[in-house]
Image (cartoon, rainbow, N blue to C red; front, side):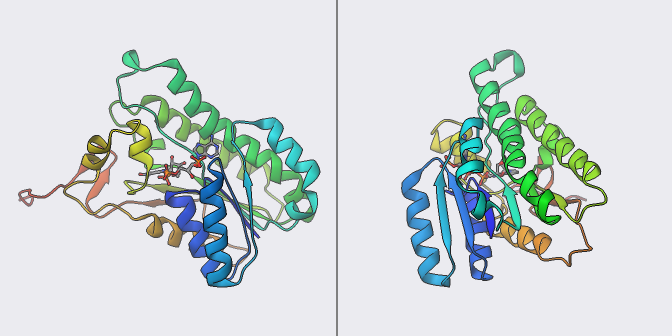
Length: 255
Ligand SMILES: NC(=O)c1ccc[n+]([C@@H]2O[C@H](COP(=O)([O-])OP(=O)(O)OC[C@H]3O[C@@H](n4cnc5c(N)ncnc54)[C@H](OP(=O)(O)O)[C@@H]3O)[C@@H](O)[C@H]2O)c1
């Protein structure tokens, strides 16, 4: 069974579709109950797989602890956990940002990932198998202006994943991180708090990654033989060279 946090849209939803199409049972999580319900129903019918769903805010550590006690037999069935729930809020210089946005990003992107890891670790350790796939970002490795706290949370997430891989050395548990560049999802709509025009401008004049492109990568990483671990996979659209360097049309080709 594949557990996916942030499965209600974008990359998480695309991962749900890709893994269901490959015949895997799923456990989907997110805050929007209706989206979870309709995606679960659709994937059950289309692929004849089992799809569980749980409405859960990854910032709520108590909810994870309840889950660990109430759902231990299902947690034993999880073979891969895609630690994906996350968001950026705002794109301002640090001196103009708000502490509410910073806290929400830290609580979701870093602490939420930590609580998700804490939930699965005892089950993976007991079974001496399992795979964490963290949704990092190119923003973790290469900073861009005004990315500040979002980049910091993703850098911390990459550090957490790398540390976990070291701590688990000698076990059969795998730890991988995906680091996508621009992916067209609800990400920018959330970042700009519903400002559609500003969100659309992020993807204009270039072909961004689709959520399915990242899901393909996640499926590939998850399906390597057990003795193979992909530590980190960086995936850009061809029209992007770094978080701050994109080629938009119309543009003059470089000489
Ligand atoms: N789009 C990009 O360009 C890009 C690039 C690199 C990395 N990423 C990373 O990819 C991941 C997925 O983002 P996306 O692009 O697919 O954006 P998205 O379409 O906005 O999806 C974000 C997902 O995270 C969930 N989420 C947010 N806060 C949550 C919370 N407190 N508790 C539980 N779930 C929460 C949302 O579900 P609910 O709102 O229903 O809770 C949603 O399913 C994020 O970690 C993001 O940082 C995105």
